[in-house]
Length: 334
Image (cartoon, rainbow, N blue to C red; front, side, top):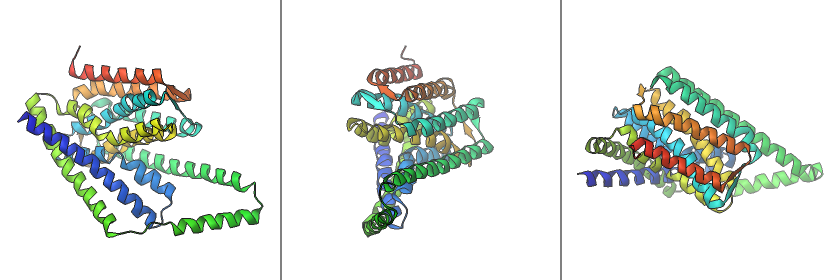
């Protein structure tokens, strides 16, 4: 029976991650086809899409009454994103370079969202009012990010156009806009099929993931929160892992790190906040005693490393060793 539920857990997790991938691909194309700018599509659909597995699995867990899984999943994912994924990316690339825009905008927002999360979870439960505050904070974060990035894009465009005479600059802008319209993707039946398949895969994967989680918890006599903060968190962080490691290998530090910033803020505010608006969420003892201090420490180290503008290989190795220590404390290995 144990083997059966392990297989169900792995298959449902794979279905959840793959369904998210299909949903992002189709939604991105649909967004571009209906006229959304590539920047808006990137910030909203693609940026948020990598956290769909955490969000859907959290809703499924809360619906089944195991609300401790929601916070454990989000907190575990944030710990894995920093200590495991950033650590592995730094080791693979040798050095991650943190850009000024990430330091000025993303680092403070990540720190603020983590402090808010720690403050809200201090009493071991999350109420409707606290969840509403988290969602409102994320809405402000998203709006500020979009406006700030658009200002940066405009300033870059003005710097380029400032070299040219105004008439030529306007002609250049008109040609660019025309080309953008010409390359707008056309929707096909295949895109809609992929979209529907992605949604169905997310729903089925989340349902059986929670079923297997509950049964494995009973068989192994381990709290559902412990499984969620480790196995589920790592599994649902696979999209971030693939994106960041591939980007690190290609020396694209901004992509590798920007992916983590956006995902962690979304996990801290939305993955917990949205289910919390419909269910009273509880926090299990191990998530409270080990998970919360770990996510606070991991974020603090990440912020300090980011301010130095470099995350070196030795820092990455240190992050990985801390993640091993985190797992050891959870399972009482020593």
